[in-house]
Length: 269
Image (cartoon, rainbow, N blue to C red; front, side):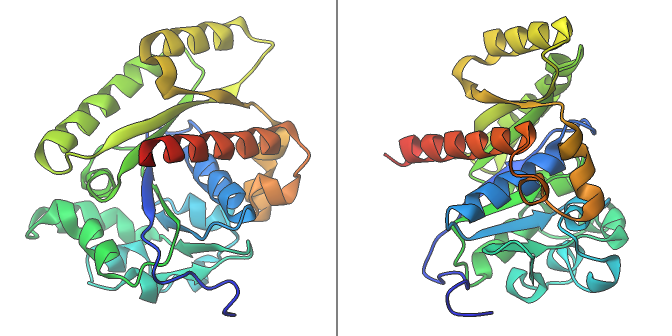
């Protein structure tokens, strides 16, 4: 790596968990493209792929043969984040990849001391240097997600515009509250982003209104539209911001990054 793009090792990162226990809500897509948008404005960003499916790793073009060490080794094997992170093709964006071995981590973590703090301890023990660390959580509320919530300062929740959206996210909110009470008193919800919004569908408008009525200003103004280019990008191993910057999905993620930064500045004030 060149000195120009290496992380500044004196920087203390902000850590955001991208979480929703329901699959197919745009969680990994949000993690990848939010990270890319932040990197585009000269932020140093790390994604930790904590999903055994490894979709964030695939979506950033990291071949499975290159994932010799990753988040499993960080959680279970005592490897450092610094030792496992890979530089991606996006300038300023690094990745701790995931592989199928992570699927067994839930069972292995059960018998470990301070099992909920494994990820937090590893991140804090590293050299740091990132402005943001985004943790892409699995679609479940097990020990992998608990580790992410204990390590994070805030949670960003992608929420698909569908009928059972509010019912699903209520379980996550309860989990966040339990983690706050027991493990991480500073944890909060940074925001909820509505994804896969279809302006032609009245249901999307109804769900958006319900979510905003329930969560108020926790919901970002930006909505992520249902967009073909967003769906195509992962198969090319690229964030949609790289695949097609001009499409509606890319522009939405640029706007979301601006909102995230504004909220971060307000929180720090």
